[in-house]
Image (cartoon, rainbow, N blue to C red; front, side, top):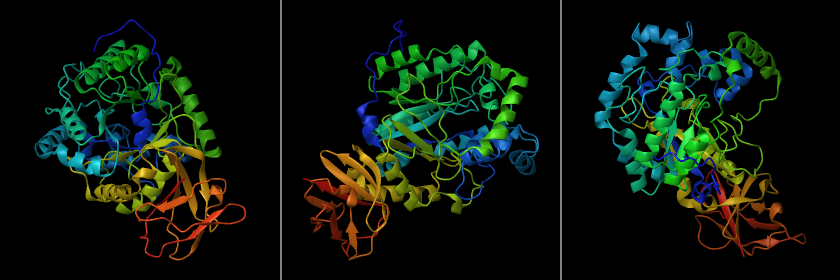
Amino acid sequence: MTKHDDKAIPGHRVPPWFEDAKLGIFIHWGIFSVPAWAPTLPPGQSMPDLLHDSPRELGARLPYAEWYANALRIPGSPTARHHAATYGDTPYEDFRATFEAGLVDWDPGAWADAFAATGAGYVVLVTKHHDGYLLWPSEVVNPRRPGWHAPRDLVGELAEAVRARGLRFGVYYSTGLDWTFEDLPIREPLDLFAAIPRDPAYAAYVDAHLRELVDRYRPSVVWADIGAPPGFDLRAFLTDYYAVVPDGTTNDRWQIPGAWVRNPTARRAANGLAAALLPKLPQRPLEPGTHPLADFRTPEYSSPGHATRHKWETTRGMGAAFGHNANEPDGHLVDPDELVRGLADVVAKNGNLLLNVGPDGHGRVTEREAVRLRALADWMAVGADALRGSRPWVRAEGRTGEGIDIRFTQSDGAIFALLLDTPEGGSKVTLPDLAAVGGRRFELLGRPGELAVERDDRGVPSFLWPAEAPERPVQAIKVAS
């Protein structure tokens, strides 16, 4: 990847393919998939709830199994206690042998088949998480832990498999954190940024890795996390990236923290302020903040309550973790029907859903996650036209006259009303939000023929719900002229 002197990124916009895709698959898989353990939160809660309610306990109680190595460094944490009881004094690094032994049976084609069936448009693989372990045999040597990478090119093999099935391939790379360079335990919110290595060697290491990933794999997405190290030149990197991948795209998590956060006194005061204020403030969507060079924002386990002009991508696990957490009960995972409804809600508000899959230590997608992928596949086989390639309508939300919530999209001159429930067969369905819409042809996706629609004197359309229509978590009605 050639370095250019030009510091501008002329004319770059969110690429149309990303606008159209709507659904992506995130993959967190690595050494942390072997211990596969994190403390759990009450059903329905996730990391933003913990951050809001108990910021002092963020690191110790974080439900992210992929953060196992961090929690292990916090004496008395649930993870430290679990590890001592289960593995004694075995260091985290020793899980590597088990992980690499399991690679013999890993089948990237099976993953790609399951992901493609969901109707997803792209896959983003975690190529390096915060433990610093690489899923590709890099030529860029880790000066603190040489050889800290997989012996098999997992990145390249998965890229080839998903592209063969018509999906885009992207790379996540932990730009901000690498615990082989900085092992400061992350206990409280501001510790996140204090743990970003400030050694210029780390900035050079990140830059070299990202350029290697671009050269080898031509990723359609470069997905950063937890900021970037001081000295990293994002504008130069992106200029060169877009020269290689003109329709590439990147997210918003590139912020470089101020030096003050490394000062223990200042950080202690800031953490104290966060602990005092956060529980008293209304809980807001968890977003990392905007970046002038970002194409899209990335709220985590949350989304805006309305349609936005800017593109965004919400990311979430199927449970409260991204990495496989064998400690999390099945009942804590998102209900498959709610997952489909959530996708409709995200798309109506100009978002994409980046849904995580956390394979186990042997590279297998667990059955409980496969069930949810199949639920998406089943619905997308019927309703994909209402989402893929669509854009937000003049309003994102509405309600039938009978009280069923609706989300709206538009595509190719048609409007789609997405009912977030199935009406009773033979019952009346009224769509007051479509009174001013002149469409004459109403269709229920998945059912042949038109619906027999009547309009009242105000133009409000209504019809009787077909008794033979199967129950679905989202019912998509297409309105065309």
